[in-house]
Image (cartoon, rainbow, N blue to C red; front, side, top):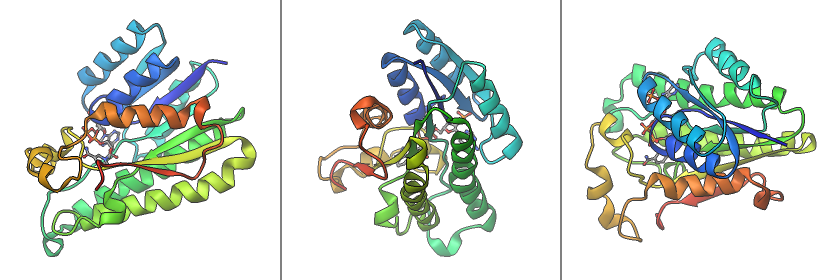
Length: 242
Ligand code: NAP
């Protein structure tokens, strides 16, 4: 059976590495993105070069109508078998007391509401079974003091979503797992105002360095694949010992 997998936020960072890795593992890949069409199209070109079908679809995952369109576009490739809930944001790094309510709401909207909306579409459409991987964060258990406690709290919700959905969807043949990356070298740090974070944080990471997107992508591909056939409800930490 063909694997048709949606990767939200698949144009850059962890999502882009995951889309490329999944194509190498035999998946057709739908690359969701919000703004950066050129980046998403470049990932799709790599998916096709690997011999698989790929399509880039603009969809803000916090918007139910756009999520519906993303999943409709995937249906054109065949029955959905995989979802990587990856599209996520932080907000400006800083003390909790300075957190702006708009930033809080956007983090909840994208990182929690968006994940729920996409998982719900997947649950409805994976009629032949499938697998979902939620990209959580090591922040869920570390709390991110002085940086973004609200983001950490939302990532903890991702872990609970993973555990609950794994149990609810198991009878339907749908496995649900999460990865919890530590500090990974992507644009997300610049977007939160700390472009050097992967290097400045290295000293407090037991393995002594930030991770690379590919080091997360491999774990996601494993959790989606047949070697993880008895794995559901797991949160796999990929954080260099953090
Ligand atoms: P990134 O490099 O900033 O890429 C984010 C991707 O998500 C982009 O493709 C972006 O699309 C997309 N996106 C953002 N908001 C979206 C929305 N509302 N709707 C649809 N797509 C949206 O981020 P990353 O570091 O790869 O992070 C990916 C995931 O890993 C996130 O859930 C993040 O919380 C998690 N994570 C990251 C780290 C880390 O250190 N990097 C650590 C732990 C967890 P555009 O390109 O169109 O803007």
